[in-house]
Amino acid sequence: EYRKAHCIYGTYSNIVVSAITTEGTASDSPRFKELLSTASKNFNVEEVVADMGYSSRDNLKYANQLGITPFIPFKKNAKGKSMGARIWHKMYKYFKEDPAGFLKHYHQRSNAESGFFMIKQRFGDFVSTKSATSQDSEILTKILCHNICVLIQEIFLAGLEIDFFFC
Image 1 (cartoon, rainbow, N blue to C red):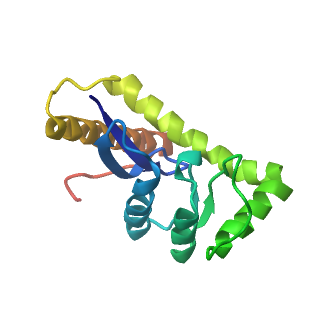
Image 2 (tube, rainbow, N blue to C red):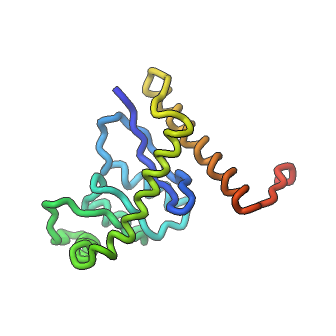
Image 3 (cartoon, one colour):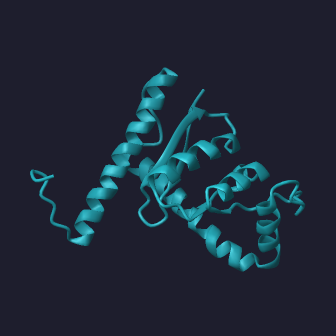
């Protein structure tokens, strides 16, 4: 048995802006709304990029309702019929008629893979606790530590002077 982290990353910073832990066998798609809802409450999200595991009319429609453009590739058997989700048809048409344009946006998803890689490189691939609750806590702690490391890195790269005593 293992646990799994579902995350939304900032595309420029690799900061995790929303995270959920689940059983390792849990599917991705049902987590989309909660992840995106949390991210959009705390950040100005203009686009969301996700892999095919999140591809559904319901997910695209939800993103569109939040004013967010979804760039989620379509499965081979997908059809362009909207079936109540006009954004599905619009993005399907874009996906089919301008694949290079679609992929230009979709390429941002590689940042999520980079983020997961960064966490695993710094803090290891595995958790050391046994219970599901402890594993979830350990995973979320690794994510928090990752975010702190990224913030520290950005402070140094930007040459920012921060007075923590004043803050």
